[in-house]
Length: 305
Image (cartoon, rainbow, N blue to C red; front, top):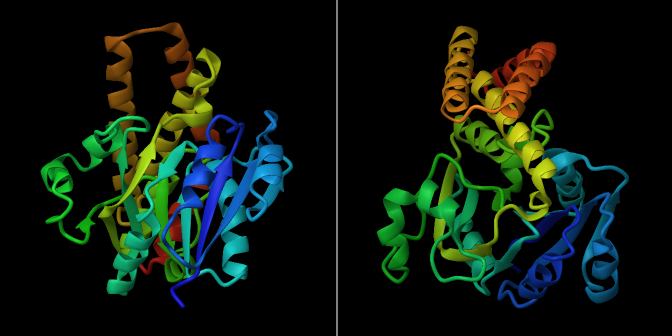
């Protein structure tokens, strides 16, 4: 029997996306997998659609929106308790190709030190790579276009959480997603921690998904502003908590990030963005004990002195 794979789909008002995502998963060629939809208190009826149309899908309903990190952690804990060998985080605004899971697990099983694997992302309705692939894997695009001759995997510093396969051993040794990130950068942080533990993070050319990107964040100007705020806040947290760096080194990286944000603001000034940046700095200042706690915890757990 091949390794048991739990696919965790974190949903928040994903009625537009979930049916297609779950339908393509049903067509996968992999033999031993289960699907869990973790719902972050949706209000659009998407959870009812899952229960009515996809009876084989397990549902976990959170009472509140726990964010990407802790929302997924709810599903990850359930998967580990039920014996999962791999956990695959999958965004609801995706459609998986039939060989997606099989290719990920085949590569994972080929090397014990491969800990995190990601799929190549295509446009949701087109034939080209999407923006993430073009940016994060821009040096490998020609190889990715020649799928027949591409390597079985390409080493990366991180892969995106839209399709994010993690071995059980990584989750047990390195930990789950850190809820200090409500959303954004949590998967990059987990990749960094895994690499510190000498695991490999890889992109699998023969594993492919179609990813719209944005999903539940595409709901008007107010939601877009919140998305930008949370993304920038998480970037500051990530910059300030690298366990490989000293406290002084992390403070320096924080200031570099701040300088970059100020330059961006100066190029396209708006009072809303200026207000959000100022509010963010106050927020982070009040959370310095939590930032220090994360840095010390990760540094200690990863045996970095």
